[in-house]
Structures are given as structure tokens and as C-alpha cells.
Image (spheres, rainbow, N blue to C red):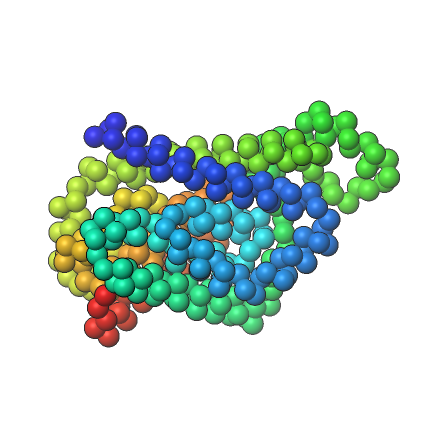
Length: 312
């Protein structure tokens, strides 16, 4: 069992490495670009962020939720965009449905619901924050990620190239990661390794917990009462491990979970997005608030589905 959990954890974690590396690479490139251009890019993309994020999240993997969490921590996307991605992320639901040879229409209807909920909630969240707290599009602060991680991205290459800028008297950008393409790649690689190690450890611990708990005990816990099952399924969905979405989907297909409980669990099941958020965002209270908000949305939508008698 231990060997299986380790193997699954390594496989699930390293599937995220390309997503994380490309994300950090893009963020480093943005950080090294002109500040005005970077803020203009964010301002143009901010309002449509939840729509684009929800559509990307529907792709059957959890890499985009990790990317969204990283981009949010760097101030590149809004909280509405992050929540939209997490709510629409399909994780392992799609392959499980396909493995059971379920009708494609049934699968697409669930994915469509998740996308619609992600878009609506994301747009409303951004609009509400803008109205109440006058929070507009975020100002990029990607360099803060490097400062918090103590990655020491400055290198000899940067020290060789920096004098020309220092000589010009430009001291407005106190923190830098070095200059040139190699410095950007190196900084992205350092961040990727740090986050990957954290994800691997937590994924292993939760995978071990799921294996020890067992599928029968989980089914008994979730299937004993419909309303309670909705609250518990959303809680299980928050577990940053693919086993959570697999268990919820399997229990639904076996008839143990109702449609509302399944929806609640899958809405909260955003892959490792929330895990990456806690690793990269220094504001713990904000992270907890986002996690609680995702959980509440999952439960509320799940209860609405149950009360309306919607079937998939």
C-alpha cells in the first residue's frame, strides 16, 4: 500500500511540473518587462478572467488550478478568476466517467454546470469586491514570490549586466532576479522545485489517509444522509488529492451519492489549486477565506441541485 501511495503521489505531482514551470516562466518574463506594459495586460484581461478561467478549468486535469493559484499569488489575476478555475476544474471526474463508459451527454452536462457556476460566481465575486472594497484589477507583485521563497535568483550573469542599469540611476526596482534569459529560467526552475516538493509531501500524506480510511468507510460516511452527505462530500472535495474526486465520482456512479452531493464534492474539488495557494500566497487569512468560500459555494449549489430534483 505504501509503495502504491508513493508511486501515485509522484505521478500525480510530476504531471504538474510542466504547468508550474511554464507559469513561473511567464511570470518571470512579465516581471522583467516594463511595468506599464505588465499592468496594462492585467487591466485588459481582468474583467474576462473568470470566463476564461472557468473554460480552462474544465479541461480534464488540475494543472490550470495550480497555475491560477500561482498567478493570483503574484497579483496577475483576480480572486474571481482563481475561484472560477477551482470550481470548474474537472480533475479526475472525466477519465472516471469515460472508464465507466457513461453517456457523453451525462458527462458534458455536469461539466457545463461546473463551468457556468464558475463563471457566475467568479464574475459576481469580482464585482462585489470592486463595489464594496473598491478592489479593481490586481497590481502585479510577482517579485514578492521570490522574496518570500528566498530563492536568491540573482546570479553572476545579473551582476555582470546590472551595472549599466545602475549607472543610469534607475533605483526604482529594488528587487530583481538577475538579467537575461538564463536568470529568468533559473528563477522559474527554483520556484517550480520548491512548490513541487511541497505538493508531493502533502499529496502523499492525503493519499495515505484515503488508503487507510478505505472506500467502504468513505461510502458509509457519505451515503448515510443526503443533506449531511452534501456537506461531507464538499469537505472531501477540498482534499488536494486526485483520490478525492475519484472517490466522489465512483460513489455517485455506484448510486451511493445523489446528484447534489456529487456536485458539491466536485465543485470543491479543485485539484491542487488551493494547496498551491497556501504555498505561494503569504496571506493565510485570505487563503482560508477563499477555501471557505469555495466550500460554501459547493454546498449551496449541491443543496439547490438536490432540492430541485436535477438528475444527470
